[in-house]
Image (cartoon, rainbow over all chains, first blue to last red; front, side, top):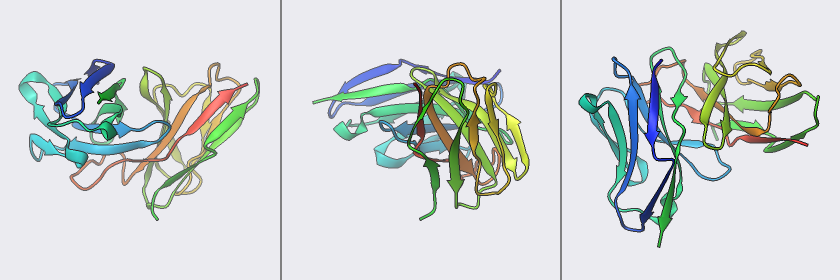
Length: 112
Length: 117
């Protein structure tokens, strides 16, 4: 079965440091890939998505992700963390005609 | 304002009761979804619907039921058969099932937190 794996349930970075959240997918056929962010007791907001148009995808709030087929990865990065980036981040995948399937999430903590 | 509205935000259920969570969208989306979120588990798909009067079971449909009588509405009933219903429930919609292009995405409601008392 296809899936995504998020490495690290908790990640802590200092304010101003690089943010790197890891996501690997298992599929012989590249699916559609997404990153969502969730603030406490809120719904999910789309950060960015890969739909095969470009391997480097830029999203909102300064985030970006690079699709690497050779590594089956879609890691999320941001050059400089801000306190407001503290949230839960979910990697998700889908194929045409199917619902989104989510990873287990990574909680990002940003320290002053 | 276009979007998805879930109500209530908080819901308390006694053992053995059925409760219904509301989800309404005014985005003119065909596809709607229900997810359950538990700490450390991510989001798990309960049910989804591609069109009015049609819906499909997701990965954890046991103990839940849905209806799709109107395009705008996709209520979820948590039945007494659901043994561990305490969770955060999220409703979402998209233009079409799995139709992900540069300009399409799934929109999520703000969630309903259900607690069994």
